[in-house]
Length: 308
Image (cartoon, rainbow, N blue to C red; front, side):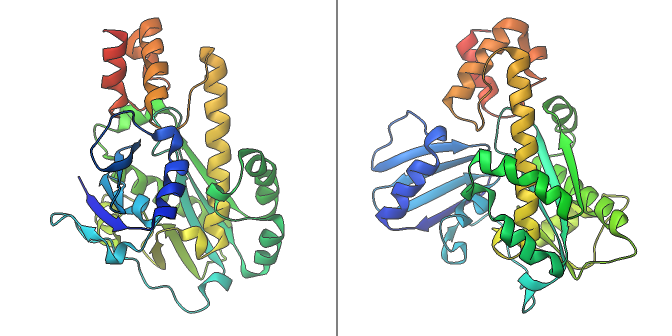
């Protein structure tokens, strides 16, 4: 498990508390402002201004709020390095990839790769394309069809049922490496013989780790790869991919909610435990496995609530 600690001002901690509102935990910890659980990572904000991130996505979560290069890492944690991007990168023709759903107990894991040529960047800007976290769900859903009409893309969706089949063999990072690689490879086939200037992956693990897992893939894309946390800030291709991912995730979660007759929440907070307990009472683990990622800690909590 990775651990990283950053120091932020009080105003940032207040923003964080609002941002993680749906993931907040009820437990009281001395000298803390809040404790939240987002997917596999626990976020603990202290009154001192320090914020600790613990879990598989600690680096990525921490990077949203501060300079992780100056953070205090766990001694056992491998440093996540961001590949330096060439000058003028944001104006180049780039394939960008991102994923959504990794931190949500319910709903699929969605990966998308988008090819944005330099000539198309002004049009993407005109559409309002930016980090999906800065857009409302209605804005995202309205924008997605326009993005699809403008640029080539490749979407991959792993349903919870399929996720649970793969997960014992593929840990979360290895699964995402395989999916990003496949989305990028299929997109490169679509745009051939044209080739991008670069491929930018929204970083979720170190480049070394990514390339290590990549060796297990039969058709690995290894050239022109760049990695950056908050990749949407460096190229609109990643921002567009994030929006398309989010749209699919929302649609799938909404469809699943209608199917079970109750709202399946996004995230991995206490509300998810309550809904999961109801599903367990209705149809046991077989029903829950159709809608939730079972390896999350929420499953054990739901089983206790359902008294199974």
